[in-house]
Image 1 (cartoon, rainbow, N blue to C red):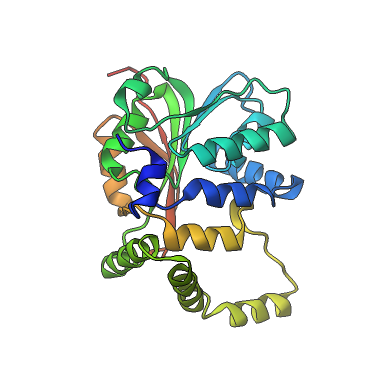
Image 2: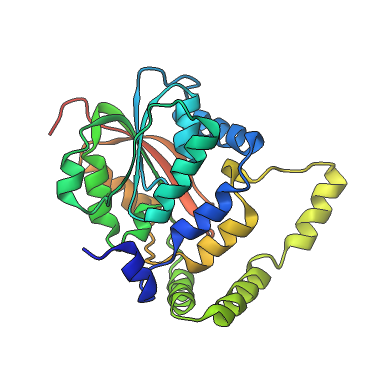
Length: 274
């Protein structure tokens, strides 16, 4: 299996970890509170005391920290060494005394996964579609859930031809130099935010200012979207059918209304192992 840095240098993978390390510098209590609130809503529980929480592809570590704040026993891992460092930095800043293991590992490494045990909550938001093998990663993540536990995942929505176009954009981004990448980000932002002035006007008229969803950052989310490769997509019914065949039951669903972005799912694992 290739190291993440080798794939990044070859233009086969986006430098997710470097982007997350830059994001960690922006994390404050407001972002942590927003992330924690989104976790509470999806899991329908404000208290995770006594429950184990495995963060598959922890990225910045923000949601590992949120789970820790809710009382969970957290374990985090990521394929990208920079993401591991970003999560460790976040832990050092906001939970220096926490018993919270952070490791480098891949969800596609079956030997590593076999040693992780089973957990009450397995969390992987926006990660499995970047592994290069979405369905194998989904299957291995599902095996990590205790009987009756929860699998919390999100997967990019399949927009048909638009998704194929974005895949080409992402591939080009990772094979380009600094100037080429800057141009691709600029053009993508112009396209993605073409309605932004109108939306800001509507919010101004209504007197509302909406916080960034899940405590994220507009700039770092944009770079992650444009560069995020490998890239896979799935329709909600495909994810539902895949996990239903394994005995999982859908507990929570939040779609992006057929548009660009991630569909979010929480499934309950079968109560009998198998």
